[in-house]
Amino acid sequence: MTAKKTAFNDIHASLGGKLVEFAGFEMPVQYSGIIQEHLAVRTRVGVFDVSHMGEFEVRGNDALSFLQRMTINDVSKLTEGRAQYSALCYEDGGIVDDLLVYHCGSSFMLVVNASNIQKDFEWLRAHVKGGVELSDVSDAISLLAIQGPHSLGTLQKLTAINLKSIEYYHHVREKLAGVEMLISRTGYTGEVGFELYFEAKGHLARTVWSAVFDAGKEFGILPVGLGARDTLRLEMGYCLYGNDIDQTTNPLEAGLGWITKLNKGDFVGRDALVKVKEQGVRRKLMGFTLAEKAVARYGYPLSIDGSEIGHVTSGTFSPSLEQAIGMGYVAVEHAQVGGTVTVGIRGKQVPASLVRVPFVHKS
Amino acid sequence: MNFPENLKYTKDHEWIRVEGGTGWIGITDYAQGELGDVVYVELPSAGAKLQQGKSFGTIEAVKAVSDLYAPIGGEVVEVNGDIQNTPDLVNKDPYGRGWMVKVRIADPAEIATLLDVEAYKKLVAK
Image 1 (tube, each protein chain N blue to C red):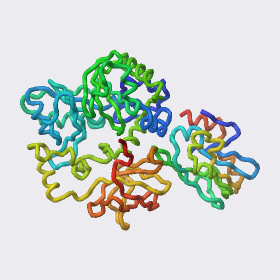
Image 2 (image 1 turned 60 degrees about the vertical axis):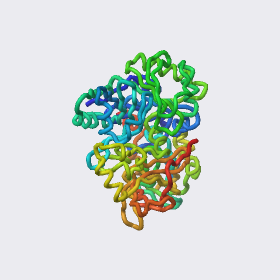
Image 3 (image 1 turned 120 degrees about the vertical axis):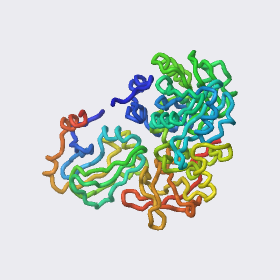
Image 4 (image 1 turned 30 degrees about the vertical axis):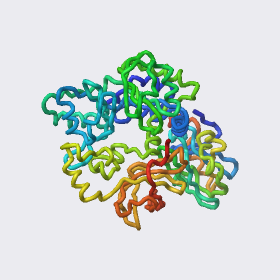
């Protein structure tokens, strides 16, 4: 199967983006370099094409009760114009996917991981009951993330709406660069930022991209690839599905208790999660840093007192801290901030200090 | 991409510049481009013996880690300390200030087994 292309594909190629296959899409992993792109987002502004993400539309009289049953956060708390971070769980409490739920008035939009689009859609479809219309609109939507301290100054030039009035995890439907879109104050970087959802058409992609880059020029705006997207999210301790969370991990041990609303009424996975809560989690997802000049990477073994306790679920070099950071599951009795584990790096046992996430603190 | 003609190359993307019985070793422009931002380079100390084709160190980039393979056998006589503190020299100047080790070549006959610039260009073009 050949990789799918987003509406920005030609732009990435013309900018010298290094294109790789990711979740069935040809996506830029980097343009000028991961560190430079990462620091642009932390100090200025950067633009990510994340059109590979999946979007589902949920409509109908029973849409709310359906989502209340399928997701772990409390959808009844969502009002029009708000978004919510949530997850889908299996009956045993394992995670199907993490996602965003947008309340768009007469419908809801779910934003899911690109690698899980088909799995999630089938999972949801199999649970549809009553008046629910579920559709996969992933291929019809372009998604650009504009992130960084100057994201607001950049985008404000292109729209009539006062962007400051959009609170975190809120969204509006407005024109930006003359293009009708959903402007959402969300992101995966920890910085002030916006995500723009609009119709996946080549000419609209070019219009929005060039308007954003013209507006951001004075701030030193840069295109940012998936490489820096990963280092930015890991500095914030955000989970990545397939690494830090999957069907074998539950949200409580993954540090996602804050979105797990066990008292909202019944939902898929609730019984199992109530049991986990009562008995207490056996392990916790913890952050760690390395003092040595080495990088812990996904899959490297983690041990305590010589016995293997798990593996690194995410690991990289942090461009902001200039040291290696990572995450992994640690048995609760050892999951103490300030504690030490060792990471097996090519046969060498390298000490790692357990730390609180986020690794990088943003105001 | 830059391919200096006065160097010999390996299929693992190292280069060696030979002057008399001495060789300077590093990674190619292609290799640094594929690796991306280099953050750490782990090298042997002076006095260490390299064996042709065997790993003599590792290079950590943000995204990936890669072994370094010796283009030639010999004794390390000098290690580039600058790249320990400024590893992005490997990205910025892979054939110059980003060199890694200087070796006293054990067997000059091994040089003939390396790729010349044309052969290396062909390898990279594949």
